[in-house]
Image (cartoon, rainbow, N blue to C red; front, side, top):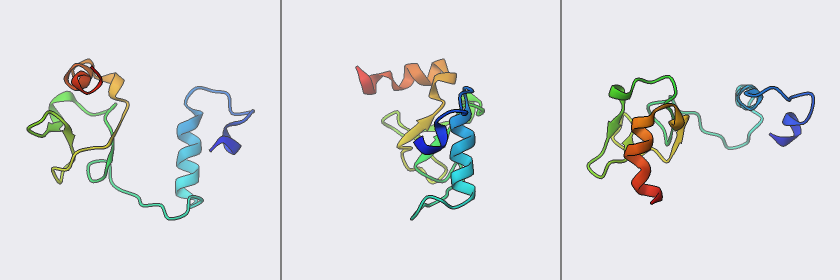
Length: 89
């Protein structure tokens, strides 16, 4: 991604555009693509807080009930930050 993020890419958010470009043009070898609710990475910025599921230990889980390893845009949900703060105490 660094090759694509050097100038003239200087607008905040360009990383998302570059990431999507690399994904949709299949430039990343051995890549797996998951729907947002199905894989180990979940973007939660646009989700409502009450639509998120947590397991018994308080970890965010996907539609299959598996723990989400990477939570993208978690900072958009203060309640989520508070709920997960025990992981970084």
